[in-house]
Image (tube, rainbow, N blue to C red; front, side):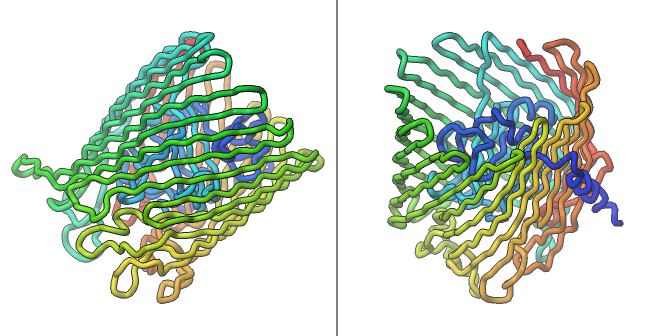
Length: 624
């Protein structure tokens, strides 16, 4: 067997063992785990009729992940592609859909660039995150555009009871340095949390391409380290106003500097800012009614420069700025203990400012939705419909239904179907030089999901199978003009699990997709590019007194880097080791080795990935 497949085979074997057959990854479906993203209301993860996963702060710290992307790697339904190490441009594919077919929220505020349709996952600091909710499958009937493959909601740090300071300091390979500190307090009438974080790495040589020849990666000869640094601050606070009204405000600002291999035209350095601001008012006039009002603003800015190492001169290359202003009102009415009605209005305004002049640089969207959730003994039903009125594309309707049935021995069956859509980006529509097409229409999807799960004491497992058909995908015709010419059919299955036996905690996640291009022409039947058909992740942890040991195995099958399927990237596997020592109830020392066997692999052709790395972190958390 080839070395790059050995770890993948090990991960699959572990995941298929009876001990590992359990719920969706680390604490993914604990009985008391609450999720709000799947239905826009609070429900138990076990009761969701669509696949969900929750990663909380304890999971984040125990994993010793160095970035958000590292934490998400190998999670069910998720494929990642990265351009050369920490801080580099990264794409996330949910259930085989396009990278701009996943909706991302931070504390309820929609983020991402309206110009290119990207979410800068690499610039969202993990030290600022309290919890992540992942919903797999379409949620356009609740959220509108972009939620074809799923929704990821990130919640920033929040205080526990009492006064809770925290500190962490870390060092690692490639001159990695990290520090974070925060303090929070929860009282009888209010709470607050302030968190600061800083990270720096000298990085690796991100691209092995050359400036000569067609298809040579980054088209640059820069065999040097490409560093990255990120400084961020977040603030969350809330207060009760009387007995029926709560208010909350939150802010996250992350400034990043990124070096990459590039040219005088596209630059080789970037100064980036991610900023999310929001406010939330909740009114509960009685035990049956709940009204939520939210406002938010997300800014994404990038200033690109070219640094000439020979002359030491730094020259301007380009800048891009995106702003998303949002507002929503949602009312929930409990008809009785088993039936809930929800209705709401969402408003969104996208604005683009850049050194590239767009013919149109802003647009508004208003969405209205209605949802129902009901329980009938062992049966549960949910349904939602939504109508979006977009300034550029007019009206668009979406809907979804879900059904769940609990039967003996902890088994639960689920079925759901939903439609989704994605409006074209400003780059798709108006990029100068004839590269855009203002006649483009939204992409549309239809998804069916069937699932079965079993929940036991200290173990559980879930299995989901799905099919997604996407029409009017934006692609290029034979004259390289953008048109709604492509179609795709994606079939897949996900097996996830958790078991706690004899002091060992085992979490496993396996995903398989068949993402096919259904478009007419020479690419018909090809795999959609940059998606691995199979991924697997296994996390095994065990405590020994004051010590805790963990190992993670990750495997990814082969993928193609191009639509023609001419450039094939082989599969690979990695193993990570971690050790934790509780110095006291409040101090913890962590050590890790990632990519233990120093595997060489690429997720995008020509772009390198880190080899074996070491890390050491000291953590302090009061009241642990």
